[in-house]
Image (cartoon, rainbow, N blue to C red; front, side):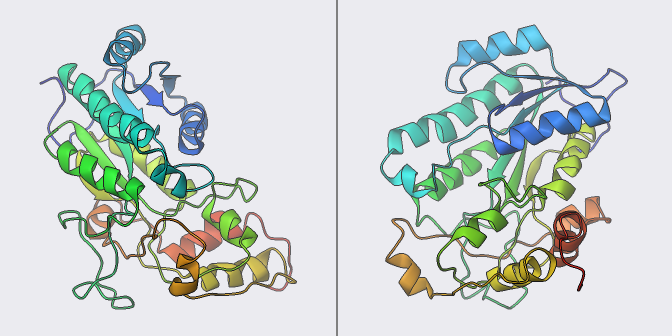
Length: 302
């Protein structure tokens, strides 16, 4: 195989990234990061489920690494996947596996932005215990069809030694106008649940994913900030830093279940592995303040 062993730095060959997901949130941010870092990159034009089109992209671009930020999450949310199961399978399962397979044939590492929404708190990992799910744990949440397809494809991708699977959860960025941003979502909801969760601060973690490519890291990684934060804690920060007049209402999981089609995942992921590789990684609440709330601060009280 053409790819180096896990954790070796890239060769002297200049970096060239091929990114799938041009129109998506993470895909767009990756392009901006490459520009800022002076990394040569191109967006894939092929459809993930079309092997020939992917092979054409690889031969045209001749990348050193491939990034997959394409996928179906559903609009406006994952409930869409419940009524569009074949479309969800086509991209999330067939497409992702095809891309991984084509990359393996060409000896290329694939950085795959996956999800950590394949677990839920259980007896071994109770809410509030600080005991998170590890990379090797078997997914225990298939309440939504979206999560079911993601758990399925993660299991199959374990057999591809060229894939780096990043389990993203409830992504947040400093762009508070983006409707995909978890903070933006919950500030617009009529009511929110209040459950501690692992989350991903993209401003801190996306540059780390580029560094992971440079180090040729593969395997599964819990790709969240250490620790958990609850909906209310985030909304309290929003009130303190952004809008002192902001108010919100909570409701229970049982009440939430009446207004959504598919259940939602709530969990804590163990970030020991990522933190060992990147000791500078900030705990979730510190990262929220540094990367999201301080840059957007509109109040003077904090």
